[in-house]
Amino acid sequence: MTISNVINHNNSQLIELPLEAHFPDGITEVTVRVNGTDRILSPVAKSWDSFFKQGPVVTDDFMAE
Image (cartoon, rainbow, N blue to C red):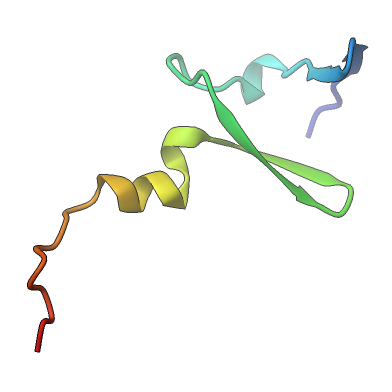
């Protein structure tokens, strides 16, 4: 575990991620979940919503009976 800095800028906060915590190239958006005092960052492409949106789509008559 490493310690990083929180920087207040206008009405936002910026977090300096240490090199070993950098997101892979191409990750430009993250979701932020709040759990008590914890903040959990996840790439948008890895969220459950995007997983289900990218999956196969069933036909309109699926489970019609």
